[in-house]
Length: 162
Image (cartoon, rainbow, N blue to C red; front, top):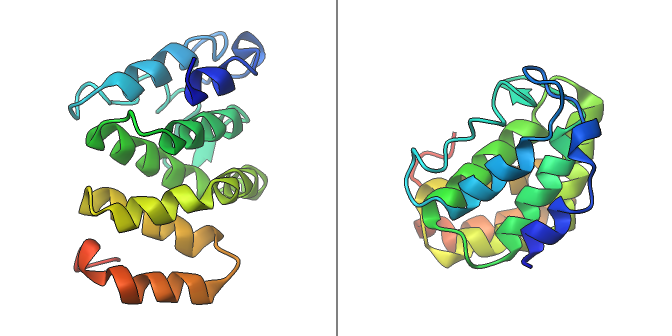
């Protein structure tokens, strides 16, 4: 059992809400499928987007999903594309219009903040590094640390960070 599976097992997904289905019971399977993917198509969040999250809205299910995504990022078995998708989803969660859900997701991201620094400093993928950097700008409580990261890792980030 890996970190994602362990985190997935902590929730009764059948009791969590989904906007399209009776419950979020399908979400663990989708997250595991995404985690095992290597291409954009294989990592498409089909059971997440439009189900528990869409652009600016989310259901309470985004918080356990955020925890699972952070657990996945803590491991080293995700492909570059899966890491990119996980970070993209997390970014969407921390900027939700629902301030309560967004703050809860920010707390989740803060709990694994060093995974975000590692993502930027790894040099694996500039797109993933951008999402990690954006997340750090949003959740880091020590702005000097983010400024220092930008100084030491500027060449590992895309030219345009907007």
